[in-house]
Length: 472
Image (cartoon, rainbow, N blue to C red; front, side):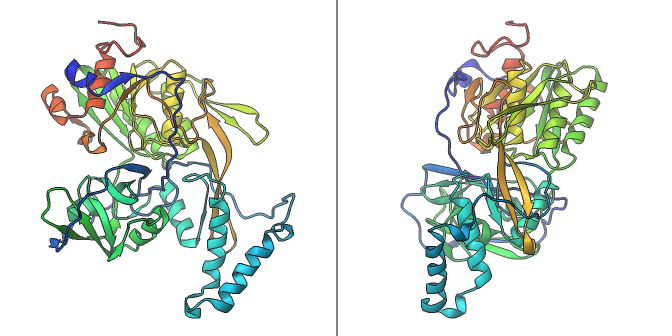
């Protein structure tokens, strides 16, 4: 499937003891069913150009349309309750400072019409949570954000359909989502978003980028784009709409290998995966599975348990849950009827594989069930509980850590693959659900991570541990 030289040019064996820094910021992705591709916006050049497009990666944000916390392993939302904290904010010495700031804004700010007391309170709450340093995991959500966050976990999305990362303090499009408004508008991988509705993005926080990009279905947003090779800056208008993404897609590859792409852990995704695996079993000719978790931002932890239980027998540890007192509680698989208990597996991950995706990769690796190929993952190591607050706002708060079965804590460091292969997200193969690909078609994709996974299943990559009893 791919030549050894091409793979070796982009790979090296990685030890599990290495845990380098990987502190990034991700935001929540959410989607639903419908694809508004009509009224394709025009792409027009704008006078002016930029001398040096941003190219240094600072932090990663996957922003499918509406963005808050990506990479959460979420518990079901719990209701508002009275708390019994050991201390009160009003008794803290610094509370006087907070009150003084409030008073000065009320009395001295140059434009009193811009002072919105509710926004000030929400801003203070957001700042308190942000001070924990649990970026991309814990966060305060205003009522609008809370609605979208809940909808994301239930598989609903209205927005643009793009994944972005930050380079030199500017948002850069990693890839538009397939069949999304962004793709229909002509946005491309590596496009630098210079302005949003005329407002420069340089130095803009990821939260501010999120707020400016999100909006109601049918509303437009105009992005000023710096694109390599273009004569000048481009203005591209995208009409926000519903995003159509199936949680699970799959295709048949040569030699009896199935590529199964799990895109999210939204409600029901585990059962949908089970159905796909059962259909593959019914064929009787599947020799191996490549489980593709790249760009998977996670979701409900209950769905992760369902997914893991398809590949591991009952009672196997999926992850260790570490509570505030430091105690580890093993969370195990459920049921004896997993749909793929014996089929050889290779798991694909990249830097946008987060939370539940990391749990599955770690569980299959540590239980000796699969090897992991790709890039260091995002590093979501907390279980996030969501507390409904008065007025419709919510607090998403990391209430416990999770570790791999071997005890590795991936929080802010990520999961190290057994075989590291780096490639742009744009090189990922796109498949037609229930389709087939020939060997020639695979080679032409340039997806070196997938090609290496196939070589691992066939025992052709010496750097990969012999997980399947064959070195042929």
